[in-house]
Length: 318
Image (cartoon, rainbow, N blue to C red; front, side):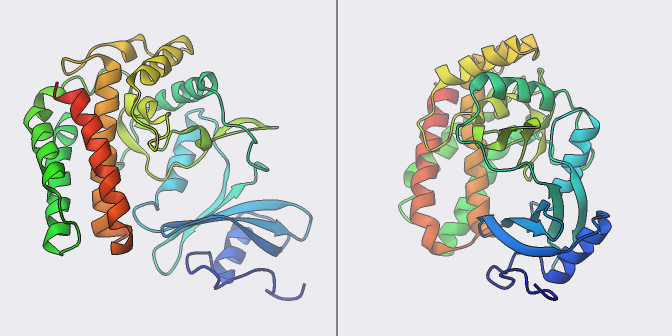
């Protein structure tokens, strides 16, 4: 193909413009040009494409909006500390302030999810990283503040006339806030440091180059038990026994034995499962207000928040 006629630019407003893609390829030292772009995963906040090159090779181009624009820095930090992650070939900020980066292409996604044993080994590698300067820190004060922060987002949604019939959500947040200071104790018991935050089986790519850990856009500094609690998909009901199995697998893989220690007066699996649900609910509410303020999604998100807060209260308030 001639010139820049190699892909569906404009089909998705978040995809990297041709000029940005060319600049990334040049910065990466690739002596070739793109000939096609294949969308792999596109949503409101980020776009991932496979870019096929004239020399027969391919790279992954990922573009993301705030608050997901530090992923290239996190990937490079993790790699320096020995974590198996995709190589960042080049990264830049677009005129709109979006992150655009080129990553090595690991090939097709695996047909099957990584098993728990592989996930536990990957989590051990992640948590060996010390806290990264500049990332959000989820210490005891920040953890304890999550219910009240979530309540403030809820008030904004109600004031805008968007969320209605929220009395039960408010009641759950008040119950959680009442115990938050006590239940947040022990947050810094190991593992504590760099956390992945989207630690699901789909975030592991098992291929010819081994296991690589993907999707670091929401990485933070905090308690590694939240990663272990996130391994089971959140569409499923919270299963604290499954969290306990993951903690045992993590310790068997070389993780800190303190991962199984009681904290906040609770067994590790209840502490982790409860706080993970509170943490993601605060994020869902914040997302509805700040990042994806689409009322069309409100009903589904409200049902999800109610379910997760009910699970959190079962763990943290009883």
